[in-house]
Image (cartoon, rainbow, N blue to C red; front, top):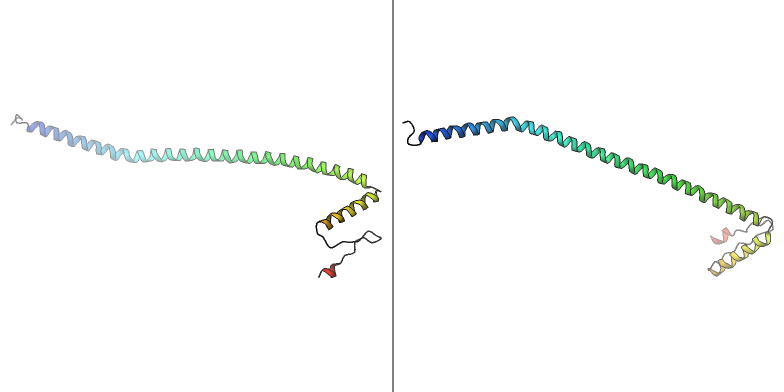
Length: 137
């Protein structure tokens, strides 16, 4: 009975297998909760990094919008200066130039008539049009 028939080796391997399985099970029971904590920690770090990247993107977009708005405002100021200068030049050229103003008025009436307009406003002595509002009702 000293194991010459191989039963001792089987018992030895069985005991070793049971101890090995018990050791693996104990290691798994000890390691799984720790791994879940480790995994959550990594997930949190990844989400934090993503949130910081998104914040930096939004900041860059806001800065670009701000810079664009400044340039658009500057362009609008330059355009307004050009319009003001053009109005000054036109006003100076029309000052005491009633013949040209009358020509423009007649020309605009001709253009309106060519486009099919049928209502014409005739100025009075004070250069105020006679409005026919009651007639159009």
